[in-house]
Amino acid sequence: MLETKARVKRTARVDKSIRKIIEAERRRQFEGLEMIASENYTSAEVLNACGSVLTNKYAEGFPGHRYYGGCQEIDRAETLAIERLKKLFNCKFANVQPHCGSAANMATYFALISPGDKILGQSMDSGGHLTHGSPASFSGKIYDAYSYGINRKTELLEYDEIRQIAKKVKPKLIMCGYSAYSRTINFRKFRQIADEVGAYLVADIAHIAGIIAAGFHSSPVGVAHVVTSTTHKTLRGPRGGIIMTNDEEIATKINKAIFPGLQGGPLEHIIAAKAVAFGEALKPSFKRYIKRLLENMKVFAQELEARGFRLVSGGTDNHLVLIDLRNLNLTGVQFETALADAGISVNKNAIPDEPLALVTTSGVRVGAAALTTRGMGKGEMKKIAQIFEQVAKEINNKTKLKRIKEEVRRMAVKFPVPGIN
Image 1 (cartoon, rainbow, N blue to C red):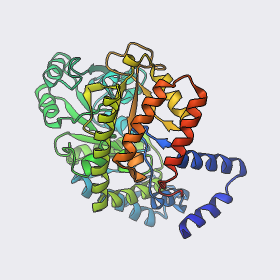
Image 2 (cartoon, rainbow, N blue to C red):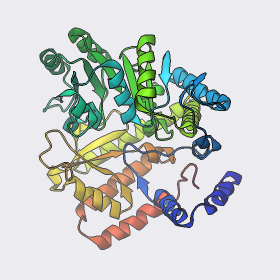
Image 3 (tube, rainbow, N blue to C red):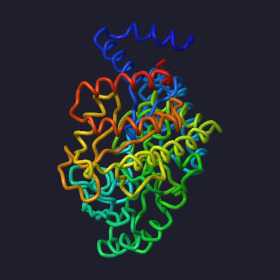
Image 4 (cartoon, rainbow, N blue to C red):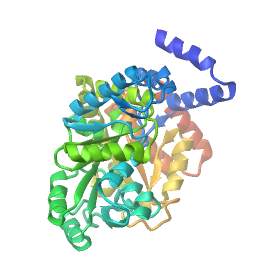
């Protein structure tokens, strides 16, 4: 209660126009259901670190090797983040300075290969990320990018097919990991393929980092040459990136790629918040959280299928599902908009062999990480699946959607949002 009162006092001292925006956003988060798979809630302790005086300090370089004076306390905070991350993922070397996951991937490319080299990554319509070789991204502009997909019948990764593509392309780097794929990934099979063609293997675990840290998915650390991730999503930290490896030579190259190659002064207030989040993830309560998250998603997926929704790959092994809306004659943007009118946030998303433009899409991506953080369980997942069905049926009925939004609000406010109420 004292922390909440102190936060209210601090907010009251914020610029009036921004204060109104912050309060409106706080109300939106509290009264609605956040089901975008890449979003979560941090603890009050993480939020406090983000807003601390550490934001005032410039600290180009790394602990013990800075280009500015006065970094003694900054060095301690960053070293703590590094050591906690190494313990969390059992890795030998870690860089906690990337401003985001995309920056972590960019630095890894810069460290390992040269512009124009061939890279191979998962296609976006199969669940991959922009930085895995999309022509809209630096990864597709700077490098000669090729892609692999999924089996069109099973909608799962087909490793023999990936191997054949890799043998034909002969990439210098293979990227594995995803943004919208609901199944487990076999990192060892990817490493075998990489070794066969003489490529580096990079595992982007941005979405499943928390699941891996809690021991519910195999780890790529020690398998892939480099592991990158964001620190929010299932890790429940601030928005930022990290890079891990067990190879000292690669670690040195990555550090140089981050600074001075890519970034100047690191965001030390965010790095301190990362340290807080890593400490929280090392506690037994975090493993219990991930266990509940996976159970919630299993129930949610089953309930959606029972109500006529088609799930890509037929279900989920992680924190998200990808819904193919074509059998309901809906587009992703239509369903995203209608759910927003009902107080639920999701994002439109491409499905395998997407027939529509990416601004429209035929699917939506849905996750339960944030709802599980709020304490929601299987009963709420069943109720939310029922609401999804109602919204799909009443897609053009604004009056009905308004009533559903009030129903959503009444359910949401029963569950506190860490750090804001």
